[in-house]
Length: 288
Length: 149
Image 1: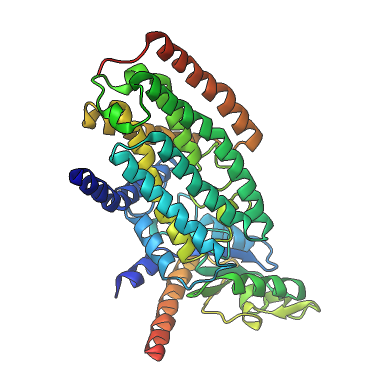
Image 2 (image 1 turned 45 degrees about the vertical axis):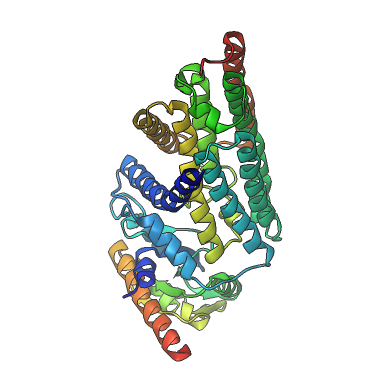
């Protein structure tokens, strides 16, 4: 038990650095795809430090509470995943954090922030069923909702649940606010109705959000590593490949509407998930 | 130079406001973002949101209408911040100086840190202006810290 806590602590401490480097790599790769040189690899750290050092300018006290809960939920979710805890609880905590951020956006009267928050609700509604379906899939395979039971499987999850690798990549694109799903705000400080849901968060609040994004990125990649837990090197390569796919998708596609995004994820995404779940149901649980 | 100073100088986020320019200067600012100049090399991002911005780039003459908006945008930017006036019109009102609705340059409304002359200034000059503004911003911040200590 002690070792589990220590692993979780190590993951929580290392995640921002890993996430920052990956985020910096994302910006460099995006710039190269646009035939630009791009910022230094450590740019996300500069941005976060600078934002922390800006003077506070809050519209209300709830904003800081909302972003703090958002960060806490990301940190806790990552810790739960590393410790092999219940995946359903993890999803609820993840959703709680996102909803707190949305409430923070709604707490200000600015129409940009309001509209961004409304759109973020639709984004949440679009990807949440895909996440739940993935957890249902692991339940059919292992008879348990805990991540630890997935660690106990002899065969990689990706061989039984290939469609969910695709849906998880879609979820990653949506959660990171990448094109064509960047309807509520854009990842790379592109403008979508000023800055969408982030419009009214400034200085230290924005720094907390950016820090939470680093945790979120590591968490989403962690989900994909879970699909090939038998060999961590393959798992990490798979996760990085999915991340690369998201970056390329971001650069080759334009922003679409919320309606399109919702239709796409609930038709194509859920169809993929349902087909895979049906196949899992037919074959039954995996040997442990 | 502390870590915060380094981070500040490496990550200036820009807000661009056209107070009444002919769009010549605005095109040159946008040219800075293209692959030829690529200001993101220096961590500069055109953020478009005053609440996230560090440097305010203003082009064009300030008239009675735009002065209010300009002041509002400036007030929404959290400290430390800097203002760069770009182009002849933003410096003094330029050829529109004597117009009935023109108040003059940006400095008739806001404290300007750096003046970038030209009609329109080159992208290189604009980038240099932003770098100079960052230097002044840091100096002001250090002076404030010394004053507070």
